[in-house]
Length: 234
Image (cartoon, rainbow, N blue to C red; front, side, top):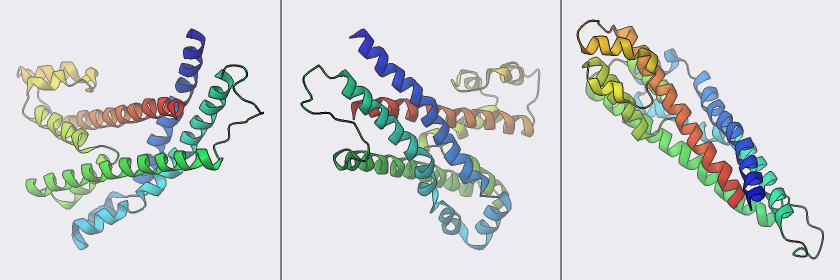
């Protein structure tokens, strides 16, 4: 059994980084097509609905990057599973093929549901961020920057990033307990909390941006691990 477990773990560990890179690449591509000037102009001319329309093709980009890796994980997992069957179980030669209709329907259904869930949760995170900016009375440039930066995060993660920024602004010691913080900033934050140092707006922006990037990486890791293991169970 240990050898079986090792072979399963090997396939999972092989595809985790590939799925993670695909997830990050999808949102990097989406962000690269959205300039701050374009988003800012849309906020001023068309309002929130016009800006949200920029996300209409988000799911297509996610699917384009992610689905090939998900299919590859299922294909290799399937071939491994066939090889692990006891002798005599298969009465005729069989080669696992992800394009087989009985396989394809299950895999396609799952992939579509996953892409839709990622897209929907990201959209909700962005809408929450926009509402927070409107309530705060922030200008279109700030809203445009936050819109693009929030891409890829869920509502909970987006809220966590805003909470972290608030802690930094208020010199709240809880900022030093945030698990995904960049600990290289700890001495600076600690100094600000004790009153020995000051935190500039640029420093707070930088720390918050690092925190946001780590949350996006964390989300990609969770999805990658889940989907690599799901490929085996499928």
